[in-house]
Length: 357
Length: 123
Image 1: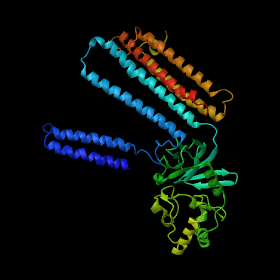
Image 2: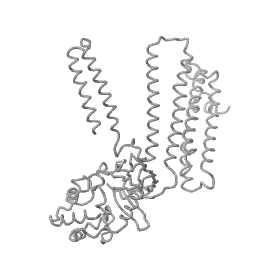
Image 3: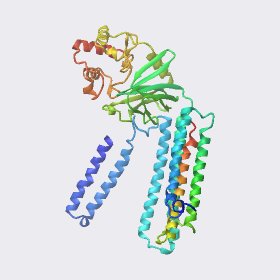
Image 4: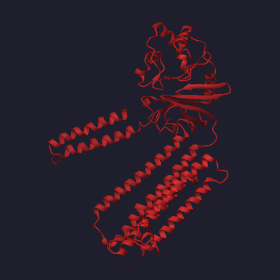
């Protein structure tokens, strides 16, 4: 966003100047013209600098996973090769426009056209095809160290880990151990979604009735962004997730904590509200009897950083707004609104939920 | 020859044939891949062997077509030769020329369709 905004602001400068120049007629105002050119050069340099802004949690140029690093390598090689070919063709075009026709050299020209226009592109495309396929084969990789099941649902992500201490179900936040290869089993319950964490690796469709797999090997710790990359309905653009890459020990500690039942209720009243208001019909909180599976498992809700599928930070206020009217926060959200909770009930419920560490 | 007009003299099928072979090869590659994976016939006959046979047959068919095209074209190959004399001979040579070029294109396309099966082993 920042990139676009600043580029267009820069673009505004030369345009205004053009207006001034045209009033004074450009051929009569070489000084203004030179100034204009300088500005243009400045604008280009700033663009180049801003390209350095192609980084962040959602950037495929971050190289936070081996898959993304491989794709990035291919990207730079292709970009460089395309730049060389483009420059070569432009140089040829200028050359061709300047020289005199030499009919006696027609045979050479024909051979040149055949080699440069048919043989070269064919060989280049085949080489690119092979390079791309080898890269894809490399990304399929070997035996994984860990399995995680991810299910796309309108409009959030169900994330399941299988541990010796029992199954762990969480949502919209996938924690992975640094340096280990994880195999994600991807599926969907309703429509086609697509799993994409650009900083870590490739993109994979999630298709109802089928299981697709994607392997990721994170090589950089941190919080990385992910999105649904296949239009899946109203809240498609708000169907996000985060991948949290942790050192293996921290990951194990976290997973062990997740496998435990919910912490003792921080507010007994709140738990009562949770159960009587019907939250448990859709949400599970292990150890309380609430075992709904339509919505995200809330057993360790407070351990997560976001709500509403990665679009809002998990704070008391955001949680209140969400429960009060999910559709207002995230248009299309399938969770019903609970506007009838008395203020005291809401506070107790929020105490309870934020205590689910 | 009995059906001279249909199979040889002045007929245009030789133009359509090379790319039809490519299309058939493309379709069959997908079908074979899908059927072999669905039925689990991999251990019986390696998918890649089937693909190799399929591809070699397609290339053979295209080369036979190229031979027919070559016979019609006659003369030394010039890629962008303009054959525009309005005679029976000119027409035959023109179609032979085009068919020959299309055969080369079809052969390249068939090889490109085949390449993924060399790189990927699994279903």
